[in-house]
Image (cartoon, rainbow, N blue to C red; front, side):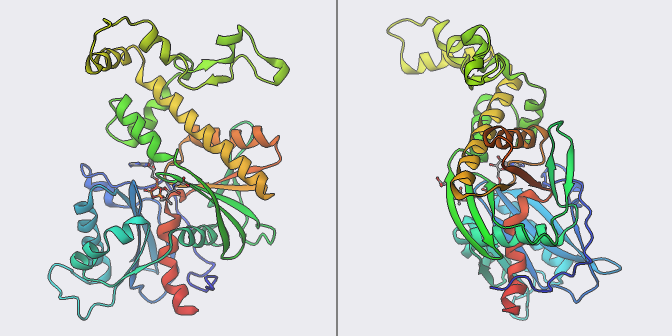
Length: 388
Ligand SMILES: Nc1ncnc2c1ncn2[C@@H]1O[C@H](COP(=O)(O)OP(=O)(O)O)[C@@H](O)[C@H]1O
Ligand SMILES: CC(C)(COP(=O)(O)O)[C@@H](O)C(=O)NCCC(=O)O
């Protein structure tokens, strides 16, 4: 497939203020804030959708006085009715097609769909949205979306330096951009080696990903959504729950390069407070023991737990990414997926992990539209398939 078509001209300008999540409670958020402006061109007749294990991402075009723009929105995948409703609104408002009143026979709008839900909800989309649904491969869509963002959007890519300052990276015309590793942190993690335009192999993956943090913090904190969890982590102190090298050695283990502050075991202090310090009758039932342990959970500040788990999962992914890049002889790693959510601690931890493990031989890159690679790739595949 030749995707490097003139789909959107190089004159695209970018206006990014952050990832946009639709919250049922706040309809005003429906005005997307991280759009990509389109040059003057004929109206587009397709929508891109990535129905993932956690979130559904929608990319659609809308008209402006001069040209148009690409809009990016996310909704939790479990809220299927809300997704259908939003798609209907988008089609009615921006594509002149109302699935609730039009028969669909004259309709020219196409839904370009990727992610597991493109299969799982295929029939539902056909029934409710009344548009043809074209499925695109998830890994391919990620790579098409990433390639577009790297090569066409100025100020999309950034790194953070050793002082944790953000630096924009210009790689638009970089002929040496390949090879690189894409580490997509969604519900789970996929690692994809990219060696040339549209030439890629999925080399590894991990089931310890965004869904893991979301799930564990749903059990262990009172946070209502992922952003609240990240806000908790921001203010937490992981040293209250993590076992540090200093806790075990009383000092650093400098001979093997471990400072006293290094984490020896994530959540390593939980065992003592939850089980060792709590005596339960020998004949207590499983339910009673679990209830006692749940009570002890309150001995921990939920902020500390959130920070510890955010570090644990990000470090783990960073370490696997380093190993995989090393195995493939790659020095550039792009981290994407909504897990990152431009959260400073996540970005710092992933970046630090890559620098630390590779002894500064590898670099971690991040994207402003990190969660939209698949949906953007599906969206772009429509035009690419026409150009092929
Ligand atoms: N508003 C949100 N609701 C739920 N999870 C979110 C949200 N924002 C970010 N996340 C994180 O992003 C992950 C999903 O990332 P994403 O790239 O959309 O993957 P998927 O395609 O599997 O849904 C979640 O598992 C969670 O860690
Ligand atoms: C199955 C998936 C490709 C689905 O993508 P997602 O919805 O998580 O973005 C992904 O969750 C994954 O790669 N999981 C890791 C599976 C493994 O390699 O162990």
